[in-house]
Amino acid sequence: MNPATCAICGQPMDDAAEGAYGDWVAFADHDNHALPEPGSQAPGLAYFCAGHLALARERAAWRCHDAVQALRVHADAQAAQALSAPVPLAEAAMAPRSPWWQRWWG
Ligand SMILES: [Zn+2]
Image (cartoon, rainbow, N blue to C red):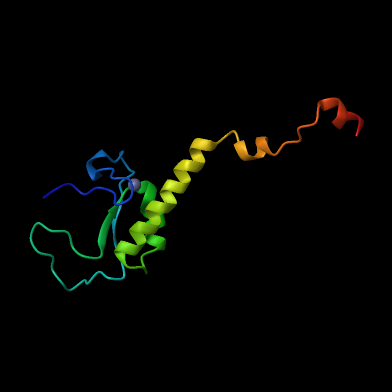
């Protein structure tokens, strides 16, 4: 069987730092009573690393596929935000263009 990897970032369970293990989350479309086919992943069940586990659990009421899609979008947005920090380019572009002395004298 393949080692479990985070459904969001793909971090393998084996790579988890000591004490920072992820966990499996059972989503709305997971059937507790249906045994998965040997060698295949149970439907509605996904593994998440420690960093994404809390977000995944918040969406446990969703269907697995929808939750993972939403979380991936969320993770991408966060990554983009981290890249643009700490210089807010949009803010710098909106700064007044007038020379300092004009601002000084009003
Ligand atoms: Zn992850």
